[in-house]
Length: 158
Image (cartoon, rainbow, N blue to C red; front, side, top):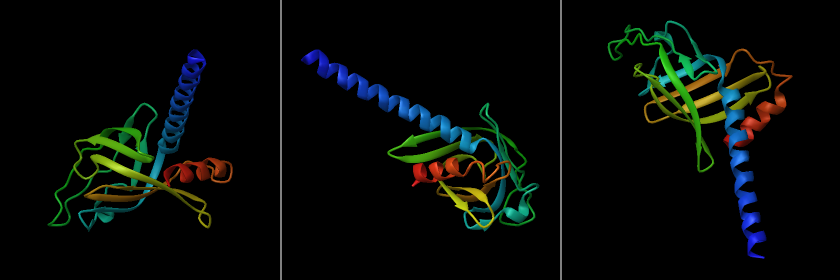
């Protein structure tokens, strides 16, 4: 009897690990690709007009390409570091995106929420931490063909 009980517990642990692995792979797929920056605030400053490009690209190898920030505003120091690394993690049913970069405006750990806009057929990722908030829209996604994946991402992030 004890062997069967231990086997059941082991089986449950394996299922939980597989479920976590599947969710993490799925979340990586959600993040990979090119995103258009619709809104970006750093310490309540609107950075969007100070970006050289309004695009962030997350590559499957863990690299990320970030926009440069120009110093056209007396309160913002420019930052031309555009390279970084990214990873996704989950803790206590919350999703986090970590961007490691020398770019001080984008470096950090962000909480992640996914949304959709049926009118624009847009898949939106909302990122926030203590200093920065971003609303970014996936650019290279066939919305109609991927609507079930989009809905799954929203369920996981809420």
